[in-house]
Length: 337
Ligand code: ADP
Ligand code: MG
Image (cartoon, rainbow, N blue to C red; front, top):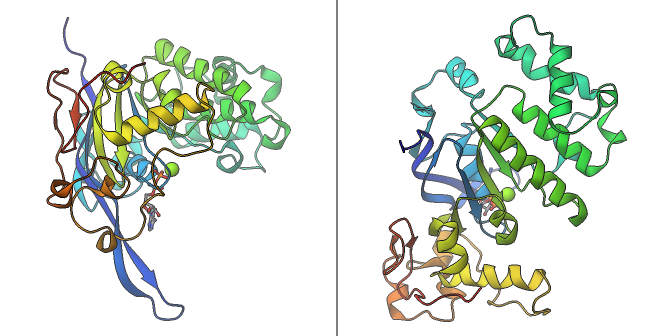
């Protein structure tokens, strides 16, 4: 079978923000490497999950992939074009190919616009996205149907909807221009557990129907498992482990991935516990974290080697060739699921 084309490729993506202090005169007192050397590729119809705790750089990665911010270094290629080489106009046009679904449908929908107006907006910017002889009203009706909402919803306002319905509108807006890639940043994290499954099923159905590729971001490995063909685990701005689903869920090699798996199992009720598995989150600027592996402050396996140069992503011995881990003392045994 021919390999499916690559639709998204990020290479050594890095984003550094200055840390500023001061009320009148802002002084730069340090920097935070929000994203540090992230490389990932996505083929047509494939889904990659990005997992990591709050502050690990997931949303910044999302903004870089969408071209909403420019990376400090590294590159993003969307459907064959390097975003850095595009004019503002070309970048706008490129946005048809890559769209975002945000965590909080409450914040991402204009409260003063009807659903119909919200969903017509993309077509005002890209009228050529309408089918021949199709009105934007017809397109809106089609979108509502695709996300499982009746036509009667068109003239209502976002506050008249439940959280799940609002997220359906967020999804409808994201697919309006028939993108090839949807970046979903914690799309179900703000929803009640009972509603989550419905939205996950909607995303899965739309993937099959429209041939979408997803970058699916979550802090919860259990959620990512439902949708991702491959997974990248981020810690403190970097990918510390990546691989296919089975690599991550059955053969996790990084201590951090293992702690996330344990946390997901506890949430599922397997082992009720209020104890967290690792020590408190290390925080602070790069200067305070020092050199070496950034996870070592929380790692029960850390030794002297981990304080030296930071570990690079390397193939996990005995696993599949796509399974990479950045750790000097990875686990090689089965993680026992
Ligand atoms: P996540 O989505 O995984 O929670 P983020 O990408 O939002 O992580 O943030 C990663 C790090 O970058 C955090 O330390 C955050 O405080 C910092 N950060 C994100 N955006 C900015 C910004 N615009 N300016 C300064 N720091 C930022
Ligand atoms: Mg985030």
